[in-house]
Amino acid sequence: MASGKGLVFNALGGLLLRDGQVTEVREVSSRFRWLRVHADVVREATWTPGDKVQVLLPDLDTRTFTPIGWDRTASSTDFLLYLNQDAAAQTAHPGTRFIRTVKAGDPFRFIGPQASLAAPPGKPWVLFGDETSFAVALALGGASPTRPTCVFEVESASEAELVLAQLGLPNAVCVERTAGDTHLRVVSDALERGLARERDARLLMTGRAQAIQALRKLRRTDGQTRPHKTKAYWSLGRAGLD
Image 1: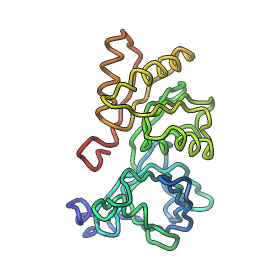
Image 2: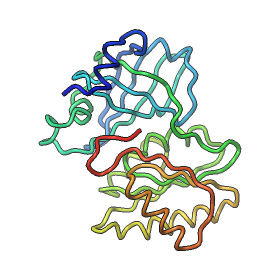
Image 3: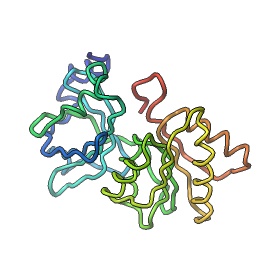
Image 4: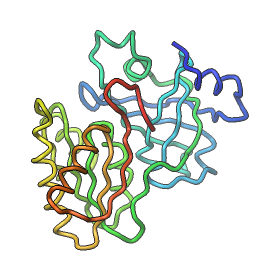
């Protein structure tokens, strides 16, 4: 189903949209797909790790994705996409349908790159997120001079650890979600251990809006005052925020 934003993007066409083509698709796991997109604009566009692109889907809805790599020489950019709906729901959710069905040769029309979440310059960082944050963690981690600390809330720790190890983040902490979000105490403690190892580290909190809010409350209760940035990518009951 078309969205208002998608209809505007499509109507303005070449004034906004940049044209690319999917050249490779790889199944990383049952819920993650890796894409490579060729687009001439990649050679000339300014990209900073953590930037986003807004993609016009085939049904004229839109979704926002974070490139995990940007190769100007090859005019290509890579994406790690997460299926956050089960197969039975794919016909009702444009983003899930796109991720399940996209294939090499498909057009890839997008706006961007645009600023979204940048790592603090010259500072180490610790990142919280979920499966929707793997891409930004990989993008920022690829540009970091030191090994970053990443803590994720996930549906399946075994799947998440396998995906992250394949793509270059083998030491991420993956904590499975529990009823009532009681797992966030474990997440908070893991984040604080990461921050304690780096005196100047900054905390980046991404992913689910409700989890970010709960962690901020936990940190205040625990007397933690380390500076942080937040970027919610989704919220319960909403398709996307960024």
